[in-house]
Image 1 (cartoon, rainbow, N blue to C red):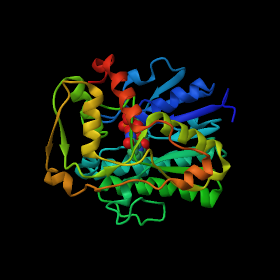
Image 2: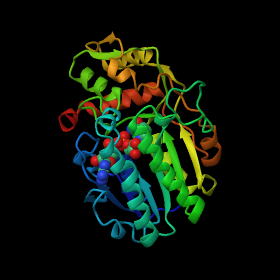
Image 3: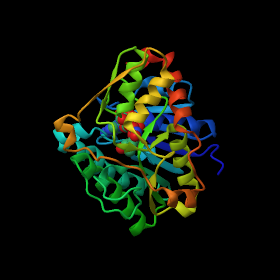
Length: 323
Ligand SMILES: NC(=O)c1ccc[n+]([C@@H]2O[C@H](COP(=O)([O-])OP(=O)(O)OC[C@H]3O[C@@H](n4cnc5c(N)ncnc54)[C@H](O)[C@@H]3O)[C@@H](O)[C@H]2O)c1
């Protein structure tokens, strides 16, 4: 698809995945508006949009008039969310307000101002919960382990209704752990890998909780490509897809890889999963994403070792901007 001159709205556009997507769309010539409320504890960082030809709109999807932002949009990439699992447990009402209620606001605005726009919604593997069978395909039952899983599932389903009832081209991508440049590394709120990277760059030991859990991780450029292909491929519209990455790895082996790539001062300790987190932990996960590969002609291009090395290198000269 030729994106040049097309109007695109990216919600959550100053966050980790949203900002990377904004860069890629702007490089393809799209006229990109990035909406972001810079929510406390999220991944928004003004530096994330440095160098991108993108209009940044600071606003909260719970309050801002969304119609002018949707007006004339060819596509809406919908990534704004309350993403913290512990945050959702602590304040489920705030979590629902962003991940479910504000989704309905956006749907209503889009009906009026961009009735034909393609929507690619950022969903999550989180609400499969503790799965019995690996790898996880889209037919596995949904059993959210926490409040955030419930609100994210609701948000996704409101968008899918928009497809079924009104025929809007909607794609929902259930993402696994994503990583790469522009990730929040100040703490572990976005992913454990964020704080690991910070620690190795500050020459401090990081903690591995448990270690036997399996995870698949998608490098952010592959995630960006998945979003764009989802919009571009009619075969994807109206569907929900799991997005995985290269073959899964245990957290212990991942920690060894990080240490090997970060240099001689990098080290880690292992401890038991903290009790309050263990209650909402999903255990091992890796996605069966063959449906998306077939529909979109997508596959992850960046191997794990390459991606981790690129990520650590990217932060070496930018650490101060991300702490
Ligand atoms: N990063 C991952 O590993 C991962 C995994 C599964 C799903 N996802 C989903 O992908 C999307 C993007 O995640 P991310 O990792 O880039 O997180 P992020 O926190 O970096 O990005 C989300 C952005 O949304 C913004 N936002 C939140 N509430 C808002 C509101 N009310 N109004 C306006 N902006 C608001 C935040 O300020 C933030 O910049 C989310 O929907 C998330 O649930 C991410």
